[in-house]
Amino acid sequence: MKAFSLARDLATEQRAFLRRRRGVWQPHLERVRGFLGDGLRSADPGRPVLVLGAGSGLEVPWRLAPPGTVGWDADPWSRARTWLRHGRWAPWEFQDLTGGLGALSALAWRTARQPFTGQVRTSLASYRRLVGLLGTLQPQAAPLRAWIQQHRPGTILAANVMGQFGVVAQRAVERAFAGYPDGGEDPDGPDALEQAMDAWTARAVRAFLGALLDSGAELWLVHDRGVLFGTTPAELGPLREPWPAQLRAAPLHAGAPLEAMDPLCGVDVLAESRDRGPDRHQRWLWPVAEGQTHVMEALRIPPGSR
Ligand SMILES: C[S@@+](CC[C@H](N)C(=O)[O-])C[C@H]1O[C@@H](n2cnc3c(N)ncnc32)[C@H](O)[C@@H]1O
Image (cartoon, rainbow, N blue to C red; front, side, top):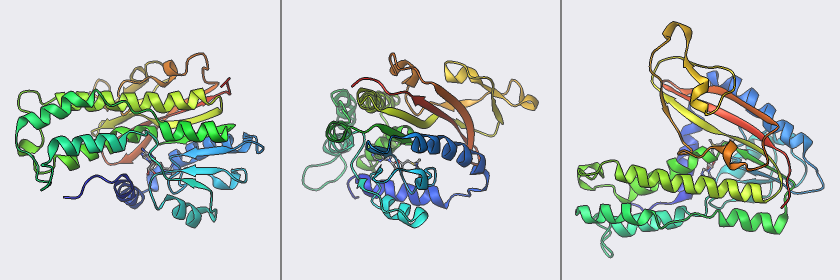
């Protein structure tokens, strides 16, 4: 069993993402490209521009990006894929945007595995130790903060990356506990690890948002606000808070339950944006795959003081 590698896992994830049937993605792609395109078009070309979660540029209209716009994505193939898609070899950062996945993975590995053999431990104590220690981890988005401090960007786009933090963290822990009896669950508290992981994700999302808000840059944020599972067709009503209040089953399915998951683990981006309320705010549905629809959210937060 190989230890967690952010680069490898993101590359695998991106390959699977790009292999999906994308026919039904067109309305999402038009909206997200339109929104991020507005951000790139209106960016001050005299200040650095940063695109976070740049991926292969499927959602990012790079032709509108001012010269020198920097991409940031920890998938090692993201820059080359962007070049293939857009003919643009952009300056790039490949670091972990949470700044905390390395420590999380190391902790999971240390608690789950024997020091020399790497064999998974079979005692519940190791599992419970991880649950207990997860609370001590405080992701700080340090690489992102350092970059911002050094380059002082005028515009930052977060291109659908925030909702991935929890998924990637989950994979790191699953990899460490692969082979653990009971499929990696504590029979006395099956939710304890999930809760501790959700709390880590919420801290990572807050740290990321905090770094963006403290930058004072104009922010163009796109993220998964929710994920719906199951086959009940859903609709969004007029914009309402909190986001689940905007959701309803389509008319012919009125009253049918909707199963929604929150990839931001309880963090309310509006509440986090302090006194810098967005001047653009929209949500739409993106049917990503059969039985999986994402509630997308896009917010433009005007520049503020650093
Ligand atoms: C849903 S994809 C976004 C696709 C992208 N906006 C595009 O236009 O192709 C999320 C991207 O975020 C990257 N990512 C996820 N977690 C990350 C992290 N902790 N640090 C850096 N990049 C990350 C992934 O590699 C992936 O390319």
